[in-house]
Length: 367
Image (cartoon, rainbow, N blue to C red; front, side, top):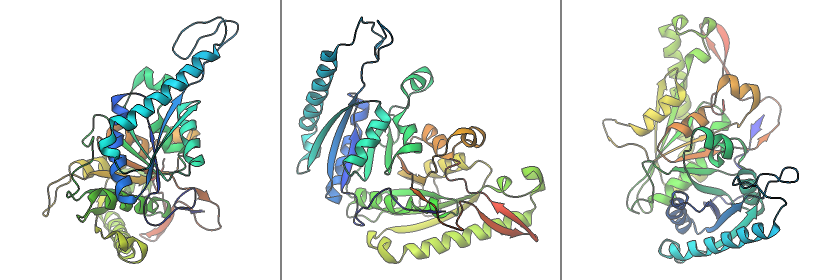
């Protein structure tokens, strides 16, 4: 199986059409300055979308989406909601005129369930990036309403930049501030599909300054080596061999990034390898508490690809991407490549360890 970078054809020169979902809240609007900054550098247009849920009726009476009870559907109410949504989006373009000056903007009002409607619009509008701010709701509200951000992990046809309403970055930084993105890799071609969109974003948001893309390879030994996947059966030689293999991998990726189209972004490429049983936690810790001899600042963004699997596999193995989405306060770039079946390419790889062939399972999208 091989993986294409994006679900559709797109330019190699950065993003061209950016979709910003808005729900009427101030939190969601925090995505606007960031989207405007990306659009200005990329020469992209911005599409603001507001999704109006349809009235839901059960039997002769029924319960509406806001908990109201009515004898029969009122089409007029839906039409009013659509008109209000249009008025709201028009007001947004005025309220954020300073951020949007000189940019081509469009508005889109649609009726439906939020997540699939937004993703359908992304396809119809030939969007190649979604920028949104997640409210980070938990408990019953998330269960009832769902989460567009969580659904993006599984279903978005294009890369999604998710900002946290209460996170570390709520607006675009100064143009002279070089940004740093941590791209999580697992050794698979799928995970590498996050590299190009991450580079595009960092280049766009860093302005004239030199941005940085850091390649992080987390080696999860218990999921690959040893009897019963227990840490007790992992020898020092196993750990060292796995680390060396991972270091060779990130070096090879770094060398490739210094050549070809990626080099045009003029970014500083760094890398590191960490052995850990907690992949998601390690990625978050490395991103939010990054310190080294050269710097003591955190990263500005995490980027990673996801399989978007569901069902039993998700239930049993969990999801690195969704774990990070729910725990980090940093912006998270989620890339869900389209899977294209070919012979002889799987998401895992094999390695010889102490004379025994074992399969190294990739975790991007365990997902």
